[in-house]
Each structure stands twice: as C-alpha cells, then as structure tokens.
Length: 340
Length: 253
Image: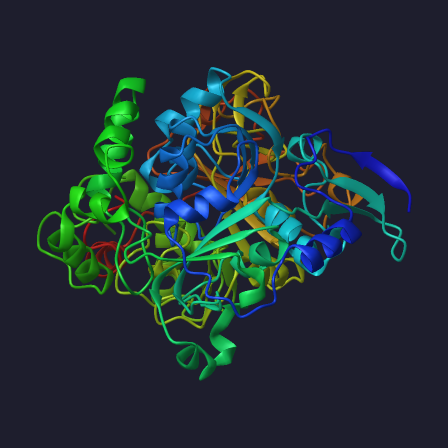
C-alpha cells in the first residue's frame, strides 16, 4: 500500500496485534472469579505511573469518579491521557498533576460551561504536553481497531488538515478506489476506567442509554477497571443478554460505586451537580484553589462515601435524582441560572 | 413581524430556515440545537437530530447541557454509540452538521485547537472533538460563529477542520467524500455562502439594520459582496415557540 502522507503526532498505545493476542491469552483470565474489590485496591493493582489511561463515558456523563479520586490519592503520576471528549475527568487528573501527556480529541474545556482553567493553564505553561491531536471519530475508531485486533482501520476523516499533521494517522492510496484515505492506528490503553449502570461480580456490564465508545474501549484496553452503580446477581443480567455491553472476560476489577459519576450525570438516575462543577471551575482558577478543592473533596476524604457526604450527602443526591427525572425544583436548578 | 428580539434569536431563526424537512442534522449544544428544534416545530417536522455521542432522534422536555446527556436520547429513536453515529455519517446518512470555531478562513476551513504556535500555544482550545469528523463527512456543514478581524483570518493558526481546503477540487484530492463542505456561515452580521467556482466566501444574507460595509470592515480577508438578500426578521410565532416551548428557561437567549 502506497503511503501518501504521515502525521507526525506521537503514536501512543499501538502494539503489534500478535502481542495483544498473546497478552489477552496469557494475562486476561477467563475464570468466573469474583472480581469485586475496593477502588483503592483496583488502582493499586491496575494503575501504574506512566500508564496510558482512558476514561469511559462522555466528559461529564457516566464517569468513574471514585477511581479518578483514588488515582489522585495514591499520587499516581506521569500518566498519558487518551483525551476522548474528556472533560471533568481529564481536568481533575490534570489539575492534580497525575497527567503529563495527552492525545487530544477534546480536552481542556467543559462543553457549554466554558474552557477549563486548570487544564488550559497546564498546557499553556508546558506542564502538560499535547503529544498528538485526534478527532472524536479517530480516537473511537482507534479503539475499534484495538477491539477488532487489527493494526488500523480506514476512515474518510482528517485528511487535508493540521489535525492530521499532528496526529498519528497516515494517508494511503486505497487499493480499490485509488483515492487517498486515512488509516487510524489501533490504540490499546494500559488501563480503561469505565462506569456502568449495572454489573455482576464477574464484570458483565450493562450501560443504560448511549454506550458512547465504551464497548470499543473495553475491548481494546489491556486492563479494564469497571465501576457500577449497582452490583446485581448474574441471573438478572443473563435474563436480558442483549443488554450486556461488556462481557466479563474484558474486565479485571469490579467496584461497586453508587453515585459514582458525581459530579457528572448518570443517565436516568441523577443529573449533573452544577453547583459543584461551578465550584470546581472557580477554585481551579488558581493552583491554591486546586489544592483547596483536593483537600476538601479528594485527599482530605478517606473514600468515595466520605466524598458523597462532603458534597451534600443524601439530600443533595436526592435533588439530583429528581432533576434527572424532570422533577426540577423551582429555584436553583441547573437550567435556572444565568449561566451559558 | 417583531422588532423585539435578541441577536441569538435572530441567528436561531436564520439557522432554522437552512434546515430542510426530512433531513438529518448533527447538532451540538447551544444555538444550533435550538435552530433544529425550531425547524422541527415549523417547516421541518421530519428533521431528525443526531448527537455525536450516540443519541438519535430525542424528544426531550428540556434542553441538553452536554452532547452526551440523557436529554440527547430521551424518548428517542435510538440510544446508540459514537461508532454508530460516525459510521452513519461516513456512509452518507447525515445531511447537515453544525459547527462553531475560533477562526475561519476564506475557504471555510476552521480552527478550534490553538491560538499561536501549536507547541507553545498562547491559548489552548479543546481541539477537534467531533468537528473534523463532521466537517469531513456531513453532506453540508453550517458554521455559526462571531465575526471580527481576528476570527475571519487569511491564515488560520491551526486548521482543525476542513472547509474547501485550498479551493476548488482540493477536498476530493485529499480523499474527503465528494460533494461535501461548508454551505453557510452565520455571524452577527449576516449569512455567507461559498462561490461555486472559487469556493471563496461571499455574502448571501445581510441581517436587518446591518450596513453592507460592515461585512468587510470586520474581516481580514475580502468577502465578495455582490447580490444578496436581507435576512428575514424572526416572526412572532417563531419567537413564541423559542421562548415558551423550546427554551422557556432562557438558557440560550
């Protein structure tokens, strides 16, 4: 195949498909083991300094906050982040100094809430390096190639832009049409952190609502830490096997984490905690503010249960559940203010 | 006809008018979403909204805040995934894609990545997100952004998303799907299209009360001001729909 152009972004997370086959045969158990552990144990076992990490969900939606917190508590550093519309998840890890490198599809901002003070500051002052650009489809198809066990997939995107120039993609001559086409390389993160609606103790997982790119990511990553709102009996999941998005043999650790996506949304269950996100945005304007936030909510709390108390406990969580289900209080609702 | 409307309401009604019935539209949060919903409630009841994270055809009683939240698939046609949506778009099932940007050039190429040098940026923006994908794959791209001399530039600091690249024929030369590219650019002054021959930006509609000279006074490249029309003002019915049904909380106004 004739290579026409090559992006000069760093190729992160690519391995020969046979290496991945060997890894998946030798290092990934097929046993129906009870994989339930605490967030602390999951991070101790499966997240190391220098890893390439990818976080599931979509920015503020269905994120795995207990694992992010534990990464910060354990002082993990020098992570490379797969920035696939990472928003609060990326910002927290970047602000806390856990991440030093990013492959960026969408980072350093909070969608309509505005640009991320901490993420931007760290990139603009050079503490965090963007090693490659990507687009959302590029990163998601990198994971698809990884899940498929092939070295790349072709895609009709990127070509003709600086996003391509700074990416790890190549443009080749399509052997059928003769036209130029981009190839995006497989990506195998060292660890993926995914929050599901329900899972059993083996790691079979159901995601209510959009799956985003989590089934692809789970299939591509070398380790998967799965958190779930609820751990249920396998028979409950087996009654509706079509709903299982992630099968157990892709999963290394299972952590029960009710309200685990806070301050993000969990579709059908609880809404964004806009007040908390606003506090985050304000505090992260300065490094002192970042320290204050971490002390108040992360390093200064023992675990996620204590964090949930610190953010307002059952009363606040009940409000967020009501808002998610369109039962919005008259004042103070997230759509009620003058934001945006 | 009403003379009491906000600039955003005007942009919304103008954007809505560009969406045909029986079409599919990829939207982000903000004004484009309002425009698509307004189109649905007026001339385009069979327009289907799609969100890049996987939501297809939502029918939610309130607006989404994120491109991935429950409001993007509530009472929807499908809660799918990004692979599904991007694949449908690549296979030609998406008619319109709405994009914003920090900079645009005369060929409609967009920058949403950095101001300044890529390695040592003065300002770091989020990056492509789905913009490169939408700009590459949707049949038509509609851009909505603020216009001034620093955003309408001859040379982008970074080409995040393809417009007509270097001009006629260059999208096909790059291997992007044929007969795609930006159709309209909506700003606070008017609506621009692209010349069929040169693929350079030209004025199509000037907003009410805006002087013709304003267009080029607020652009670093020359915009062709030939024949154009005036953008229609929002009707009372459009304003009622926006204020009472679509966005009663006034999130985007």
